[in-house]
Length: 135
Image 1 (cartoon, rainbow, N blue to C red):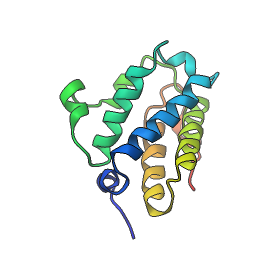
Image 2 (image 1 turned 120 degrees about the vertical axis):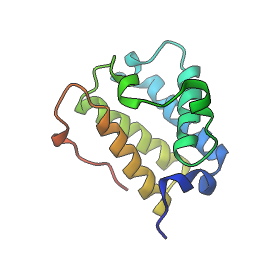
Image 3 (image 1 turned 60 degrees about the horizontal axis):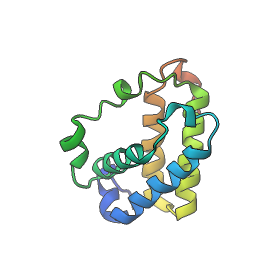
């Protein structure tokens, strides 16, 4: 079955989205390349990524209510994000999805979404050298 990105929240549920964010941020906290881009305290990053992902995947629009339009490129512009950072982010998100058992058609939709967004926020190198992470 083929799913749309805005059906993922209903298919996975709120708890799974929250768990994904927690597992991802657990990895960020230990990562030498990406950790310096994040504030010392990660609780707000966890919160906003959770709200963002549940909204993007078809859940409640709480992210927009709190922070306005996501403007992902603009929000990430202060950070130098190149291929290494993009690929490392994808590695960590892929590991988090693997750990909690997201697979099948739902995983394919999420892989495409995450690969596309991670590529869009590159701001220090050309994007034509990107390889997609797909399961």
